[in-house]
Length: 278
Length: 253
Image (cartoon, rainbow over all chains, first blue to last red; front, side, top):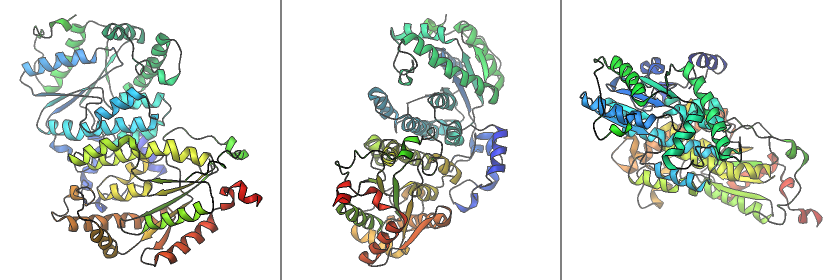
């Protein structure tokens, strides 16, 4: 996602803005003016952002930062407050979700192709699930967003501007939380989940180290550096992912309640989720 | 068809020196010793027939070449099929899926073969995406960025046939137009042949706009097949140093 300055720079170098009215099916020129308010770059094809009445809340963070736990808890809390909630995450699209799983399992694809498959997965979910939900006033909790996708490709050597261009039509979230943890903490949490560390979360395709632990640490540190840069540019709400689940959850609820204009009520998870409450 | 005997020819010195940019960056001119010839045009413009004849000419001459087609990577086949059957594809995902398919072929076939000093013939290339996805409403800037990693062709032939001729050629030879092929997703018309016609007209506009900016060599698709092929071969022979791709054995004769 080009930040404002970069956008301006580009506009000076290449004033090649395509005529919006030349292509029917595109948004009218008027909507292009405030496109950057809703999108990272240009507007999504045939979609009017003014129809959005819901809220898009993104939770980012490395493997083992506690994203999924917090999303389960937030969903329960929001539903108990009477809000409709929908979740999204990587590789969950009907179009290519399973194909990506297969590609990852076989490790038979180049990094550029994989990046484009992830991008397809993202836009399929954005257009078929996220946008319709937002139009109906639903709160969408996104487990990761374009930031993870861009960071993963950037550390694998794919050009940053290219990736920003790919995701230019992505909707800007209303709130983006970043659960920041140290890779060393994340390693322990991830290992405990499956009693193993997977090939991809250790970045083993990058030949960083033959040692699994160091491969994981080095890879996740690279990703973390990308997040640090994003955090400043895109107003991430950074939370200490090392804090207790209930502590992090309280801060999340306060910020979300504030955004939704509701009172931050007390919350304790139901018995179904109480095992998460540490 | 690659000629196995000549494939081991030692790379030329500049090929060894050349380094490719990081993925997603434009490929600089002459970053590789091979050459890329592309045909573009609407359905029914005669481009595939002509490229086939060009390929036969070069094959018979024993030149080192590789032929590649748009939308042919096995990688995204199941996704494309699923997307089309269930009509899941939107302008953006349609475009991205084709880009993933092209990236796979580009990184696994086209670029390595260009680096390995091959003549690569492509039936449709990135301009198909620019014209087709542009007709579906994808922003031009976004599309241009999406395919930034593609090497620029040495020659791009654009086969131009009047809309009526092209549409007639397709409609008379095909029992039923498919949903996306006819551009039904654009909602231009409920009548498939009519929708196809309107869609093709938009695509043709897209191609016409690229003639200058992308250095298309425009050929008249209504000419007799053999005349058109003669023009094509003359242009290839004039623009590309074909000797470089000739087999060693032929040089010795």
